[in-house]
Amino acid sequence: MATTTCTRFTDEYQLYEELGKGAFSVVKRCMKISTSHEYAAKVINTKKLSARAPFNYASLWSSMDKLDHQKLEREARICRLLKHANIVRLHESISEEGFHYLVFDLVTGGELFEDIVAREYYSEADARSVCNDVFLCGDGDS
Image (cartoon, rainbow, N blue to C red; front, side):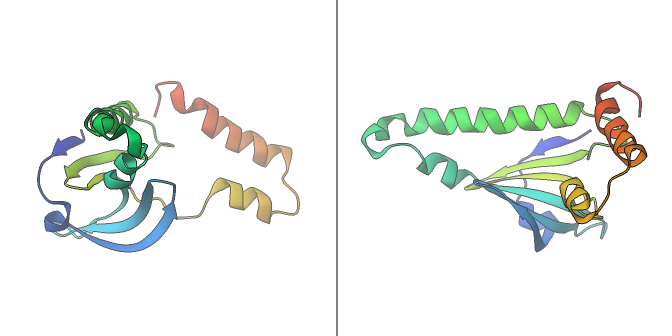
């Protein structure tokens, strides 16, 4: 089960190329130094989360920091509960000054959306197979 640790991410993992990015985070390939096993690390810039507070409400920054931290912990808790062959597993959650790291299974092969767009024709059988994989993620079987 994934745990939230207080170690420094860079003491345990080596970061590599970017795999994707969002408004407050970037996903990078990483390797656990002790095992040489590869993962995907969601690197959340908590400074950016705090910086979105309006300047005239500076007194609320500490409460926003607390709320943001609670949201990050909630995301980690939810990810820990998801156990299915078609859902990436959260291995570790590391919080440190300015950043929060969520370490997931590394999945290669591209995005589903890119696969759909790249195909000239998407058969009903292919669509059914993909939909079954997606819809059955919550059935408790893995």
